[in-house]
Length: 385
Image (cartoon, rainbow, N blue to C red; front, side, top):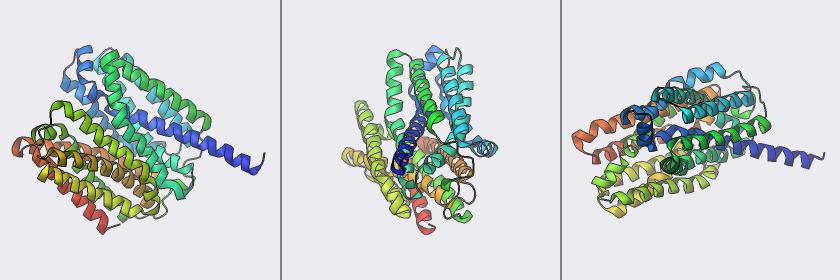
């Protein structure tokens, strides 16, 4: 075999394995958020309350936050292909268990199991994907992985909700199970079984404990602010911007579509201007949120701010994850697990902040609180690159 043919063969295998990791990412993110769109159908079928079914989403996120670091540390000696294959196999089994769940208690157990696999998957999948290619294109790899997360949020969850409405909520989980099997087969077949700790993506190029700590603080501020806004986007658009109920879906889709479009160009920026690619979207997100607070009563301003916030938030999240790989003080998988834990705690914190402000100051105050938090994150990240 010639050298050129060998390179082509390995490139095709790497790209296919990368595609499998992207598909797996889509499955995990869709699965995490899918019950939110299926609440009434699950509650009716399993004879449970909406609040009890709502715990499927809350409990999932809290589980990921609590176990990310310890589980990643406990499994870090396992070679990557074996680890990711095992995680996906358990995810497929848990997703099938959700499909067949006879009671709400059974469904909760399968969701917890899925969350346990999700916690470790997020810590190692991005690093494994980055390790398939040269460090010079790491930003594009990170952007593609988070692009899959964006697509899951914008298309996967609505598609699952649509399917659940027409064919029953179990059908949505069954489709996810089948997609998980496809990702598992490709990873088992094509992903290199790299020993843990080896490869250029396993350790940061610029390890710095102080920068990593500042990055986590900035992440906490930015994601808490983002969550405070996005949790209450619908009531804001209805009560402040005075959109009709029929306009909400298209507006949310507009925000997501802007995010996907931004991710298409984010990779090049992450590779060439990593610091600017982090600070500028965070500052732009703060500006969009402040515009919603100050001028959100104007429907046109609100629609534009929604689109800008969608583009900015997806770019910001990818840039935060990319920066973790650059400054992680130890192994990047443990650093990524710490990032994931802070991310999920901050989502819960932001929603809680909004819940406190809502009855006291009205829904408009959630946009102001979100703007202040994200502006603080932008200032911190700009001051301490």
